[in-house]
Image 1 (tube, rainbow, N blue to C red):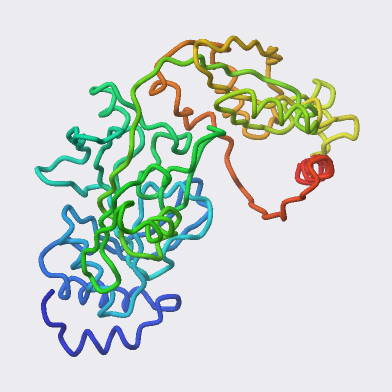
Image 2: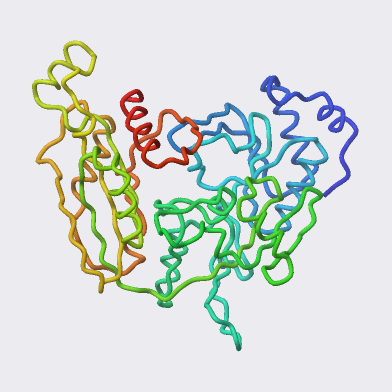
Length: 387
């Protein structure tokens, strides 16, 4: 990094990112570029995460192609006293991103040696499992498409292919495999840039405690840029997508048996999908859901994965049509098009079409009820109130 001019150090000292005017931010943009040098380019852009739950009118953005460019960006941000965060596909719903006037390192263009983004690790004598080395900006779909060429699959991540490996590790993202850890549980080695711009490397054999922290670091332990993950052999599975009434989920035995008796389970719910034609007309006229509507009759999509040797049948109660005012109607219609049962490679059934995921427009946090029965009753009340 080049020596910072005094005028830039003074501008950085006076900057309040939350209140700064665009003219001030443009000055800081110029200064950051001077601190970094010719590459990567510093952009000043608006930011929004998926579904626009988190938005900022102006953030500084770099798109490094190498680890050295990440180092220069971190050092420049540190010199200017600005928070810096790595940003992937921004599918996290909570506010874990750097705020207005902070530095976002977009990992989408980052590459490993030779310009590759995914590298299968060579077999080593005594090594029990296969592994793959990836950049933090690689998406799950990109990773699995590459692994499929070699007969492997990476299965424990989120249910959308657009999520990046770096983002999924940072947030300890997971899916519905009951006996599997979150995605970071398969991480065996990482390289990162720390807050001083230095490259650090950690591995499971010699840095077990640090690796535990890195499996859900929320962007607070540096900028991860290279990640090694364990992968498994490709396998054919039985994939089922069935609809069941919401009231079944209020039964502790239903949920317990469903989860424990299957390898993978997840669920999606689009409220109001059981409204009758008469009730739909009443909502259209009054803007209110009639008291005759019973949320327990709404249908929930359940996605289930098992080995092909496991023969399990589930009753599918999908409706012939969808009421016009169904919340997230487009997502529910996309779900209705899914096949009830199909045998495919695990790679081909891991991810849900993003169009079939109901939008999130609010979030809440609750304490876990140690009594499962009371917890299910509480959930029933919450659904009724939320809708």
